[in-house]
Length: 417
Image (cartoon, rainbow, N blue to C red; front, top):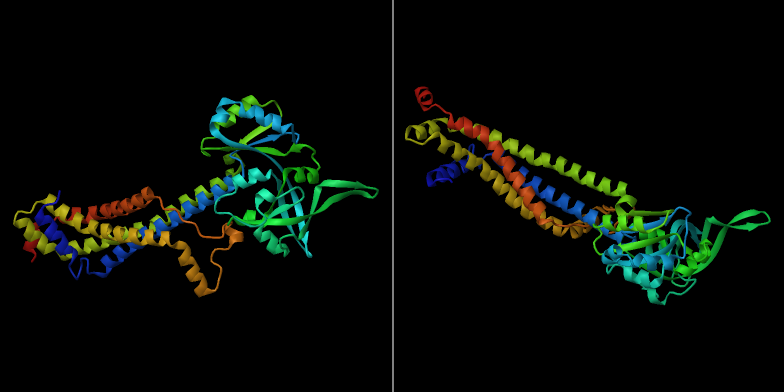
């Protein structure tokens, strides 16, 4: 593709102190491309990790497909679950079907209070759905009995309760009639276990209890508020939703995790795309610096170009010489930028902790970002794509200066010397 002569001349121009690789503009171009590529890789990795971790934990504790009833409660849920399991499509895709009784409460203890979501679930189902990364403190989940609670670690800290201490739950939705009118239902339960998922929303706002306990507290009898269906492939929900919609009688509503988290999923995708476009501008600006550098190089080497043309170097060869010279800056910058970006993406959490220690500030507040650690997920196709985009932009930046060099008229140049 490039002859030996073309490569030799291109790299000699590239190494020229005045206008080539040794010039300030060329170094700015190279460093700009390197930092642009590194920043893009880091940001896209963090956004990908943020997206997958959040969705994984949200979907992990919530059903991939959720069944509701318009009346608000589902009775004879065990019979309904057996009927659902007999469906061929559902049985093929579903790994488990879990009945849930859920409601909002105010949790109080030691003069402290906070809003919380109680979720009644069979402890065997909770144990099977708890992620391997979730830490359980206190009594094992299999040992939790009727009337005992499993609360988020951040919630127990906020209420300043330990294992065995009681939490009072206040619910306005399940009021108790009295001679003076309806009063909110208040019941006290001991916290026997706590969990830490690393997701602030759950750790600070969720309380799990045995299904029978939740049914009594919520005063819904032998019913549940919804049924969660977990699938082997969370992305493949359409066929299951269609099958359940056809199978279930009128009054039932079937929704998948995309519908339930539509705003959240859409916001993450939009943010990821916008960040990519904004940071791509860094690479584009660096590519324009290559244009400036090569234009000045062509002007500086005008006489040399004329001499080379006189000795028989064709216009095509001159074009290739300057394309190779400029694109090499992009290749070198993309190469080192990729290495830097991959290293930072891999060690992003230790880096965050280091800067957090130096500054003394929380750089990643869990209450704002919902996660206790900064996640990162390297997608090698994205890494390769970012590097190729940088090289392509550098290549495009060389076209005009290379065209200008190839169209240099040697007769006119040498006549003026």
